[in-house]
Amino acid sequence: MPTEPTVSGPTRSLPAGRAAADVLDELRALRQADAPTRGGRTFAYVYDAGLDGLDELAAAAYTAYATVNGLDPTVFPSVARLENDLVGAVAGLLGAPGAQGTFTSGGTESIMLAVKAARDQARAVRGITAPQLVLPSTAHAAFHKAAHYLGLEVVVVPVDPVGFRADADAMAAALTDRTALVVASAPSYAHGVIDPVAEIAGAAARRGVLCHVDACIGGWLLPHLRRAGREVPPFDLSVPGVTSLSVDLHKYGYADKGASVVLYRDAELRRHQYFAHAAWPGYPVVNPTVQGTKSGGLLAQAWAVLQHVGEDGYTALAGRVAEASDRLLAGLREIDGVRVLGEPAAGLVAFTVLDGPAGGAPDLSLLLHLADEMRARGWYLQPQLSFDGLPPNLHLTLTPATVGQVASLVEDLGDALVSARALPPVTVDPGLAELAAGLDPETLGPDEVAAVLAFAGLAGDAGLPDRMAPVLVLLDALPGPLKERLLTEFVGSVFHV
Image (cartoon, rainbow, N blue to C red; front, side):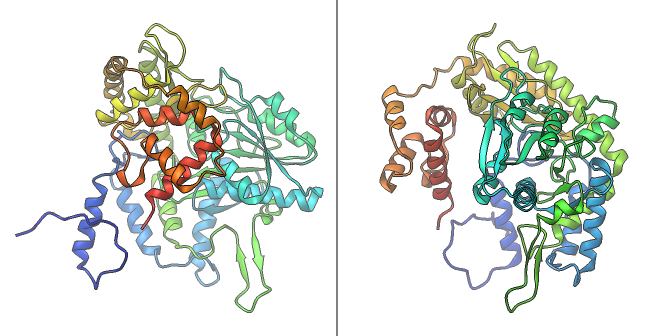
């Protein structure tokens, strides 16, 4: 008689061997605790086209190429064919004559490579030895990560506090003789608004500075929204001054995770992205990406999905996203005390909650109670904390699969907000806040870190609490460096053996 699969804890050694069915049963059981990736109730992290058979196609294509090593296209020439097809399609949609690109594992790697190319180009062409990276404050954290890894000084420019778009004049004023790269977003992740790309790129061109457009989210959606009849401002490599662009195919291209492209205006700029090394006794190494050895499976599944959906299919899907966005925005604006941030343009929506039903100031405690209440109702909305005067908010990612969920989401949101207003506010003890402000995150010892994590409700062995509002209110009050240190230690406590 079959028994229910059991989920074992972490192991420190391999078993003698287990039946394949048992292994798969345990994997399926582990997935039960995860947020759903299909069905349109998880409004972050996942992109669901809602098309029957697309997941199966991607899985079959991956399987066909899982054992192919993408390291050397001279041994596996099909890898070059697939990448040329895929990058060519992206360049045709977003590029200019001569545009060249590379398939990568995701937006972070695409951004990392664009920053490396800009740094090396600035060194080789302009003689810059202490390069700067100029960013609007809403630029994705991946740019800060790239600067940290690659040794660039980050210059952060505040954005318009009303529309949340980059301030083109302020960005232009921040450019110096040391600026290797300036960045604009289309759209920004935090608020889903499109920066003034043409103005920023034009100012960069006048100074001889490279300009990267982070279109990881919008790069595949925006052109198809335009094709579906929506007004979309110019943002791609056809804009004078834009020299590189990143676009994720595992977002609105609906490929599985691990699929992105970085594009450059020409092969000469792309050359600075590459790493080559022949001064060792092994095979000559040429790596276009951060990775060396890599499965051809992710490339194959992305190629297969793009080939299957096609231009007309993506246009239809973009229209569904736009229609869902229209209804969601209208529904949010009808709820007393909810304020949509900026003018969302590409499938992302951020809203805050005010401390009075008829208006007032953003209320962090109420907002986070609302997130918890929605999660209890089966919805995941992504909390985003306050930053540099910008309000805390809840972030939603719309996909074609959410079209049929918008009415239910808005109805539950209204009910959840009533419940959230009835809960006592979450506050941070002033003494604790004062103590935290005086802590040096670089000198905290393990016991001190563990004590603060436990107080914050982030003890790794205990897992996350059922309600995150108390944890996030505390994190919001902490200084940035201390917040980063505690989050680093928390994640380290989750991944342990």
